[in-house]
Length: 359
Image (tube, rainbow, N blue to C red; front, side, top):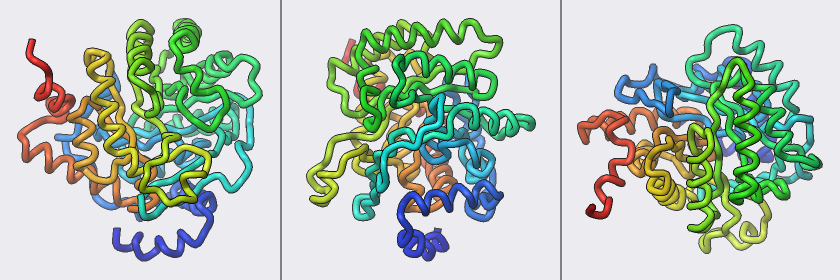
């Protein structure tokens, strides 16, 4: 951590995307063991998201390794599972640059990448080569659609077919704020139709990956309830709660309040934890939840687990804390579980049980 803090001012002289490319390149060439410190996670951290078995509940969120270039390097930092993408069927450049903005005082980012993707053929070829040897943990692919797609659901179906034999889980991204029309797929009728087509496509495949749905933090109560009902009625295996927000908290600098894109990092911490608890209650805890948003410490991860998350994902905090963050969070989380005398599975939703209304 101290080495990264020494290097961070130099990295932050680079534009955010250039620094990101440097990080991915370093992991691609095998620098992960030098960047992430510590041994394997403690057995106390063994977790599960449905049938997925995880050595650690700490995962890498989509957005870091968009094109599946550095999967083994990401695992070497200590992640229990890794999600690549978002991936679109055809290559697309995304939105014009600049499109990523650092907010160091808030440990946050604003991005409007617009699903820049190398395309599913390129990513699938990389993953096919990668999977010739076992991976340390489950691999997921985050699916999106091309901006000019006449039928977005058909693009998601194409992604299911492309990655079904290569990924352990597929995340249907219906929550990015940076592709026009994408969040409209969270509406009840649209989501019902989309999930119906995806489950039909999965049913015809010899290898069925798990199907996750990633939702936005900007839903109102009616929208959250509609999603809960819809995913419970469909063959969805987990919810990912959540994505970046279009909201702009009052304590952001004035320039950031007018910058388009999704906000991630520390400002989402409490918001996402509260949404995890709401979605756990709305689904009757019948669907595993992967919690995302503002995780910077073991205490942050523990709060989301106690709110109902079976596992968590992070990305933005890596930019500010460095690659040693993953092992540090794992150690802190293990210590908190030991303090409370809990296994990880016992901790999932512990605060929900404590605050449940009588009867």
